[in-house]
Amino acid sequence: MDPGEHPVDELDQQAAVVRLSDCIQLMQADLVHANPAPDNLAHPVADVLMYDPMDAWTSIEDRIILAVGLRCGSPDFDQLLHRASNSNAAAVIVKAHGASLDELQSAAVRHSLAVLVAPDNADWTRLAALARASVMGAAVDSVSGVRLGDLYAFANAAASITSGAASIVDPLGRVLGYSTLPGQPIDELRRVTTLSLQEIKPPAFDADFKIVYASGNAVLIPAADDEMARLALAVRAGGELLGSIWIIDPGEDKRQTALESLNRMAPLAGLHMLHARSASDFGERRNGDLIRTLMEDTVHASFAAAQLGLDAAQGLAVAAFSINRPESGTLESVREIHRLLHLVTTVCNIQFKTSHTALIGSVVYALLPCGGTSPRTVHRRVAQEIGAYANTISSYPIIAAVGGIAPKLQDLPRSRAEALQTQQYLLHRHTPVPGDTGGQASAAGLFEDHRIPLNLLKIGAFIDDNGLGDLDDIARIQAHDADQQTDYLQTLRAYLTSNGNISAMAARLHVHNNTVRYRVGRLAKDFGLDLDDPQQRLWLWLRLTTMDLAPKATPAVQE
Image (cartoon, rainbow, N blue to C red; front, side, top):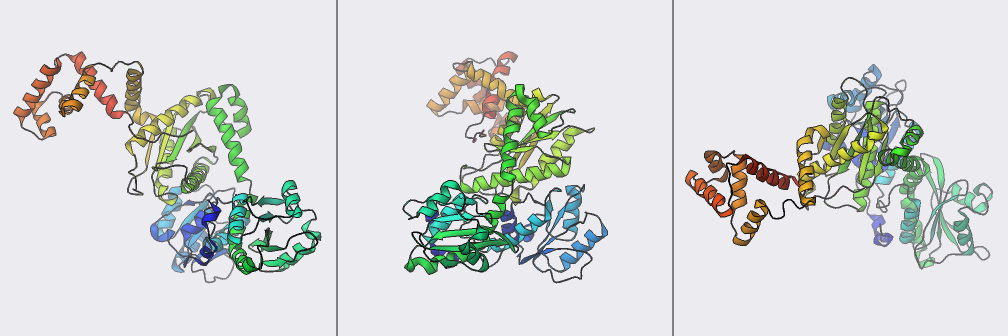
């Protein structure tokens, strides 16, 4: 995001209604929506409730309910869904604890209620804080273009909106992020603290911090000695102090507007600080490095598997997931691919009770266990389930492909190659139309589902790489069609597809049988083809088939 694109006036543009979909997006808490109907996603959200079945029933309209300690299928859980549906609750968040997605989806659909599934290892306190902060943050969307948790980008946005250099500090005095916009004045205190990433005096012993913490709104801290005046705001989420934002005073003419802007940014600041505080980013980077080693470096694969705690005794299969959108590299595409990573992680956790996932380039990878009597059936179901949830994270379809089973760690590069080949083939078949943001179904498949076309593509690549088709009959027919505006290639394709059956060709080409006979005769005569020769027919068919299968304008899978 370019901070300069957010003028102060934008802070007056609050959403009239906070929707459930907005809250889910801002929470980014690995939640899987068991019933992602449009009405559910558009449901207004007003508050968050930690549910205790022993407490007296209170008004829960438009609330997100956290079902702490409840299991799908238990009487208390069924009673909660019944009550929540009748009371028009926004959603219920529950942990799977062994329940399948089908069970959770069935319960959600039965009660016409949004049910969000959190990972079993999720911390309820953190989920509650994120949910409450998201409800507030969704209504103040002035700097939503910043990736959640990127406090340096958030500081730049705050500095642009308030016209003063910004720093974000935690309760211990650590500088978590600071702005770097050119032209904004700073003093020696700001210079020292940003270099050391630490306040000179701990906040607990600093009078200015105490003033800020005691106030519910942004305040002016007057200049002292050689220091510049500052505007400051305590950032809280669910009553918990997360830290503070400090802005170099932009001057008397801009001060009041800047103070109001800071107050309006408080909910989003809380969201950013909550996300930054978690260790998820570190875990994602570590997983990415180790999984990349498994798939690329067979020498160190055993070490990477040990670091991941990976059990490969029964084999593994590499699954690849991507979002089929016409452009990449935009802010929205980056946000969507991270949501896809969270979706894949959560579904794998529910299905396998563990997950080994990573985002590498623009592809989300997952290592799927191969235990049980029919692992490929499970792999197919997982890929299809993830594709079915595509509309919860993007308006574009998800392309999911699973490579063959790798009996040993050293076979994982082959499984990955097969997954990417299958994904590229499915991408070619589902090329998005520019400007079209919907209407296409997600695609999912195993490598063996498309083994024949994938092998034919390899043959086509061999033909091209060795120049075997440069001057053959197909090349001559192509050149003639292009030069003379004829359709001999279409006639030949229809002839081979119809196995030489004149009536079938006529129906396919929508012409009379005699016209077909004439065209076939001219084709054979003009190009010296012997269509009765089985070897020549095989070559012609092979060339046409591999040409038709080859990607033309498909966006390549990025590594």
